[in-house]
Image (cartoon, rainbow, N blue to C red; front, side, top):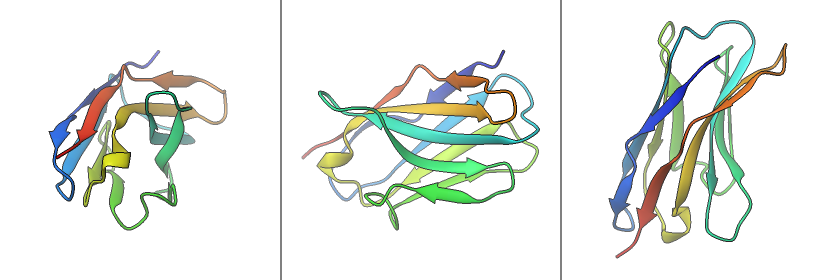
Length: 117
């Protein structure tokens, strides 16, 4: 079992930045995908950014060039740096850890991000 705890959400104005962090309760190793999803009111949960154990990354088109996902080698934390935030980025952001080889899939409790003037 792995617990994921997100932090760093809040309310900002358009154009500002926020950094989200997700801490896992134990060492992460093997083949995995760690990422951030978001869900806005009345909408389906969607992938925002992912990072694979080999360091490769994937971003939703809507956040490319504005968001950066990172994970420091050997640490159990993944960060999401969000710049040039827009009102449409408003959502609950969830951290996800997917162990590809055995199908184990974990979610954090979510953190609210609100972008509003």
